Image (cartoon, rainbow, N blue to C red):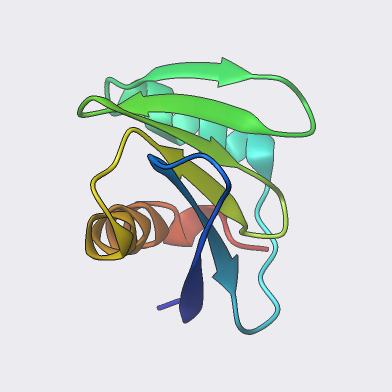
Length: 92
């Protein structure tokens, strides 16, 4: 499992998730996996945006995420843990 820290952004309802150790993800595989799971995915090449249970998550190859429309750090951490667990097969 990826260890990470949650950092509040300027925007009140968004947090960034930063892995504390080296992580790389194949975004093509990420987009394919999340699409097959039934999520609304927008693959922009350098990042993938996904609508997830009323939240918007932007994923980067480094494993960094921006989670929007959340209620705090605990909510962001729960979203990050769930996504990292789903995306384990896409890790390089």
